[in-house]
Length: 268
Image (cartoon, one colour):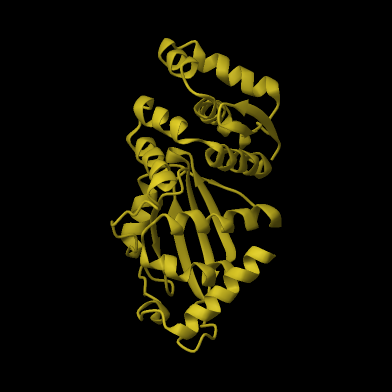
C-alpha cells in the first residue's frame, strides 16, 4: 500500500494512496459528484473523510467488473483498511454526521470510540444454529466465489483480528488458536453490505494447551469488520455443535500458550 505525507496543524500525517489507476478513481468521483448531495458532503469533508468517501465511490461503480479478478478485490480491501487506520477523530465524526446508512454510522461510531474510550462491544449473540447462520446468508442474495492465491488467503484470515477483537464475543478469547491453525476452505463475497463469508478448518487449545481435533467453522462479517455470526457445522446434516474446548473458561496454561502464540505472530 503506497502512502503520501501531508503537513497538518498537528504535524505530518500519512495518507494512503489508491492502488487503482488514477483514471478509475477520478471517473468514480466524477460519477458521484454529479449528485449535488454527494458533492456537498465530499467538498466539505476533512481530508481523511474524503479518502474514505472515494473508497466507497470506487467500489460502488467497479466491484461487479472484478468478478474473476480476486487480486483486485484484495487490493480494494487493503486500501479500505489502510484509509480507515489513517482517519482522525474529526474524519470519523464527519462521517457519522453526514452518511445516511445506519450500519455505516454504527461502524464509524465504533471506530471513534476506539480512538477515545477503547473497543466497541456489541452484546448481541453471534454463535448461531446452522439454519440461522445460512438463513442470514441467504437473505443477502447472490454471492461470488473466488479462488484466492496464498497471500490473499493469509490476508483474509488476518481479518479475524479486527473482526473478533471488536465483536465482544467470547470467541475472541480463542483468536490466537484460530490464527495459528486455520485452513481456509471456502470464501464467498456477498455484494450486499460487502459481506465476507469463510469456511475454515480450525483447532482449539485443550485444557492442557494441546491442539484439539479439527473443527469446521463458518463465519461472516461485513465491510466494517462487524461480525455477523459464526457456527460449527458437523456431519452432513443441517446441525452444529459447539466444540468442547469452547465450553470451559480459559485456564492459566492456555493463557500462557496463547500469549506465546501472539508474541510469535507479532514477531513474525
